[in-house]
Amino acid sequence: MASLEEEIQQSSFANEHIKANLNVLFTANWLYNKISALLKPYNLTHEQFNVLRILRGSHPRSMCQKDILGRMISPSSNVTLIIKKLVEKEMISVLQSDSDRREYVINIKKKGLDLLKELDKHLENQKEYVSKLSETDAKQLNKLLEKLRGD
Image (cartoon, rainbow, N blue to C red; front, side, top):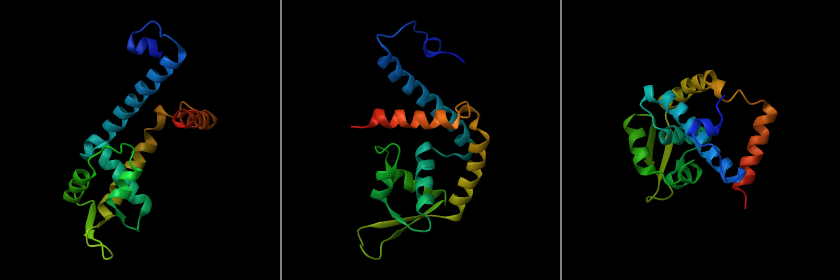
């Protein structure tokens, strides 16, 4: 296992807080690239994958666009474009709301659910890069990351 110093070819850091910050960013990018490789054969972006997972979580209930955006990992994403692409791929449906004609309701379709089921299997098989952490380690990491984001 290479240290952060080895990975980014830097011999030292001003302090452990700066090193931790860089380590979180480096590791997030590393994980992002691992997942990108998994999604690439399915012609799916991280953001599209995120929207499908959000919709699966509310299935069979529909969601509006602003609620999807509020749950996204990257809330600066162009949700309108992501939704358009997923409609073109026939993974979701978008219908006008019965209660508010200005709003649209979005549902995941069987094709989207089936794709997520297949990706779940791949993600389960690809867990070797996170299985280096024990359950206790993962809980501690989650607590530390939540502490970092806390007010």
